[in-house]
Figure 1 (cartoon, rainbow, N blue to C red):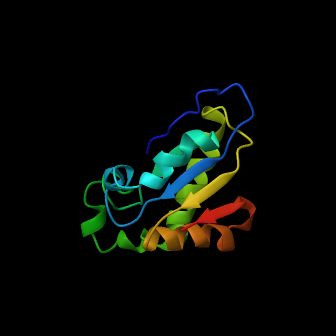
Figure 2: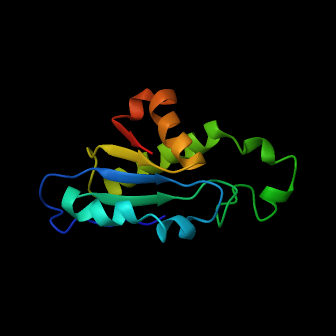
Length: 130
């Protein structure tokens, strides 16, 4: 994943716009998600693009994760949401944004993940945009 740091990092924190990656390498979405790039500066936002487990470089159980039937049991919506929650929890302090609100964004399956993040993990609200 990557992030864009607001230029006035010492002032009140803007939100984190969190892209819920879906069925491809994260680079595809980083380069094709214009809305986040277009609005990050005006919102004072940090951008985070998360890669979904089993896609791109994110192979949780090694290089054969996606081709081994016994490891595919961990390819679930719940596991992806847990990955995203862990990533957000770890990134916020390291980005100097411990209290930043998180707006989950995605399209297609990534949009489903963004909505599920709010409904299945209510402590992780406040927002979702699909």
